[in-house]
Image 1 (tube, rainbow, N blue to C red):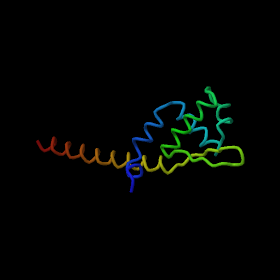
Image 2 (image 1 turned 135 degrees about the horizontal axis):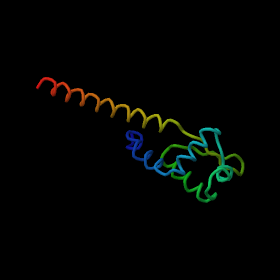
Image 3 (image 1 turned 135 degrees about the vertical axis):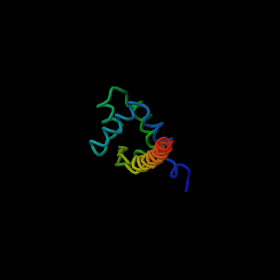
Length: 109
């Protein structure tokens, strides 16, 4: 198992840290799929900028691309977001257990 599969959060968070990429991902989720050209028409950035953002999202495993004739179409890959959400849930549960233990110790004192 690769490190990227075992720990997707750093790549995912880095990719989503940019508001344009976040908006791009949301647009793709709403539409199902899109090309760099159609996405650029909906965002306040150029087509080359959209392509650069899509490359980052693709490297993070958040979108997949497929060729349809001369077009390259992109769509969301929710698996990476789901894996990161599970990881965050596990982290939150661990902190809840730690805080409960601290509370018990404080109440016993």
